[in-house]
Amino acid sequence: MASWRGAFTGLVPQDFLDAMDPAAIAASWADSIAAGRSRLYVAALGEQVIGYAGVGPERDATAPPGTGELYALFVHPSYWGTGAGRALADAACADLRNAGFVDVWLWVLEANTRARRFYSAYGFTETGDRTHSSLNNLPEIRLAVRL
Image 1 (cartoon, helix red, strand yellow):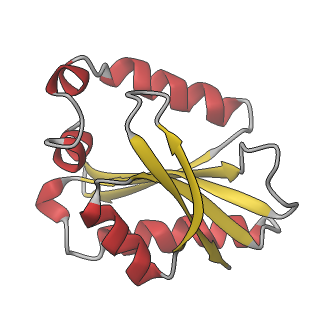
Image 2 (cartoon, one colour; image 1 turned 90 degrees about the horizontal axis):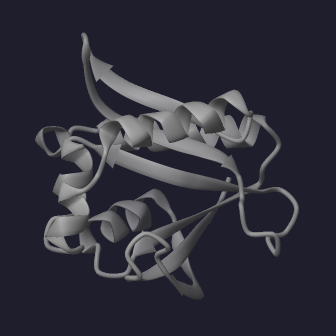
């Protein structure tokens, strides 16, 4: 949860962050993985989890064939700038490429300039698509990269 709070403090309402339930989030990922809808990569130092990335097929039914999605990429704030995020993005994109995907899409909060800089440095570009987050109704933009 520290990775979420670090990424979103000041960007989303504090009551939203306070209400986040780690057990419910873990159960949701477990269900998605068990159903074959997603795969999860974890960065760890010893026994300590410092980040994770989740990937799978693009959920947007209008996406072209061969489009995967980076559902989530979070790193504990203590490890920002260490390469952990890059390693997770590399593993996630390699997974999608090996599964036959040729493009990766993701949604990022428009106000999350730190994440947008990270994804831009990785090669993601804005597609022009915009929406509002289903979790908190904040503006999001779609980014894409060709594998």
